[in-house]
Image (cartoon, rainbow, N blue to C red; front, side):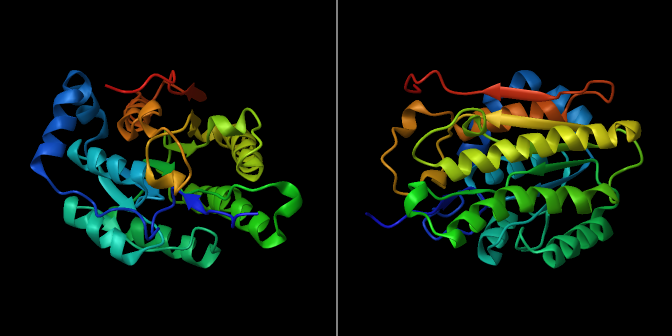
Length: 273
């Protein structure tokens, strides 16, 4: 059996290319989203938004977009180097490295972010990892790693966000996966973990409804990011990172009276032009 290949969107992975800091890429994104930028800017400007897994492919794009829209962003990931590169692109953000599976690290990050920017308006939990493999050949440590990053990490971030949220109408967006809605034989642990995240999200929404905290489960299909590692995937037929970021910004920019419970979306399988 070939060795298991670890993949993830939590950030800090050695094979992720350097973050681009080019006027062209930022201008292209701004042009693409010109129809909704003014509205999004009005609703997101000045808001304090936490992003975990900020150094992954989607995390990088999200942080850049949110800062362009005037949000105050606190970002965390596992790699000091990647976070510093991210701040070079978005100098106004607050960064602090954290192991999302460590309650000490997560609590310290939320404390520092709150001290920096005050009450939290929204949290986007992006940190996650997938390790493909046959169940009969997967060791317990691999099982724990997948569950810890995806499920425990989301739990810890939500737990320590709650006391830092603004008094009413804050948001928590947990990024799940279409893999959590249907099994596949390649990455059964990831499917299981994301299914657990969806249930955790729904239960949290019930617990926080009296505070009018809006809790959303975002459920994208596969996206063209370094998440896939060296797996043979036709990335041009996947969602683009900006497709996921567009949807996140849509959710985050809803007015306070709008509750988005769950959005499921994926590529049609046609190659992007």
